[in-house]
Image (cartoon, rainbow, N blue to C red; front, side, top):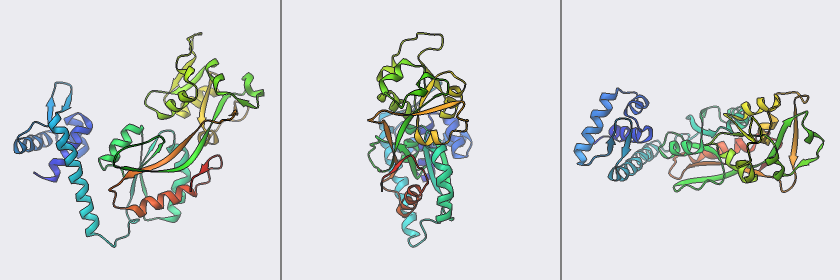
Length: 307
């Protein structure tokens, strides 16, 4: 049994596909398959059920994979002990961010972090919360930026800032004369939302539950979907409907006021809390603190920092 074989089985469990796992491990598929078969023979158990178009983890395989992940994390701890005294900020930090945070925080965070810690560049991945969480657990990411609630065993979470939501509409919309918008009014309009899988979509629907079941009263339908906040902004500017954005995304608006109008919600104003999450076993706590301090120093005027 080798550490390489353990990395192979974790890759297959993550990808549910031998070919993609081999590609992720930078080896040929036959090399990976032979190594996993060798490990199964050594352990005397079947780790994966191989179907024609599907790979499933066996119940016994689930337990072995969990232990394999623990073993690999302990190896990382050994490396950290061996390199005790070395600068924790002298290596890249692998940071994940959900799609509705990354584009709006990172342009401020990267220069701030670079000025403070030039020896710790960020390796960045944007993805859905579930995918980032999986990669964090498997050691492929060191920390992730997500929105609360987020409660995962073995992961530490630190709230960073609260961010209010705002309504963005075409400048010709009748609501442009309003001082503020009531949340229950959203169901009356063509509301543009992110697609399934985005936690921000779920947060907007929590604010307006009726928006999820609004009737299809015209050719467009009451609720439309976009693949990103930027795509949604383009559709709003073209006059398709209105949307709800986190305030940092509103501040990134590139359209002139003649195309878009921005309105606040009537209190209580809906908001989200952005947080940083990392493994409890992560061996570079100073890197996490350096990242936190850089985020707190970012000039995001519309949010409330949580020291």
